[in-house]
Length: 192
Image (cartoon, rainbow, N blue to C red; front, side, top):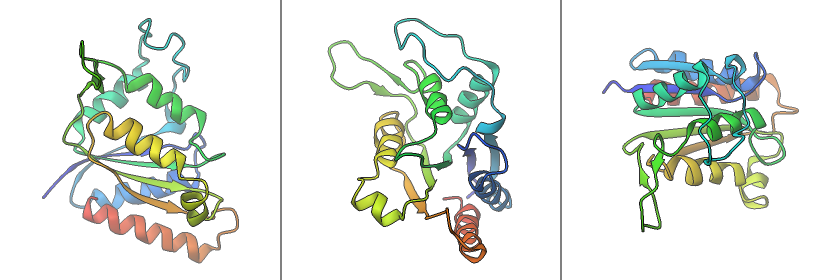
């Protein structure tokens, strides 16, 4: 079954491992699915949600394009590095500026939880890190994965994400990087 897949490279630097992995996934998925690829390194926007939800902050063209791509997609793949246990500030700014009330969720008078406006979508989160993934998961508690999967995507209506943690990147040999690319390519071909 053909899916509409949005692939997001969440690394602020062009030509990064994340960007290569996002390209790999998009190319493989594009063989049998409809794919859009957005690269954080190419997006121009103010990452600071200056007034929170108290005052509307107009969305730049790239943020509008990102929101439109989210609405179009059935499956969203996010490839993002882990820095200091979290995602890069520019990627966090992308989420802060676009997953807004009225787009991702809607508060309800007298209710504890908002309506989830992005229901029915699935996701895959691919995280690169210099920490061994087992250490990030079991000793650090995988905070960025939980934040992105549960507190952002699931909160907005996405089904719980499939995830891959790839690392340590810092001293990875070429063969290890090729193995990661092969894993990502396989998931891309399957559209998951």
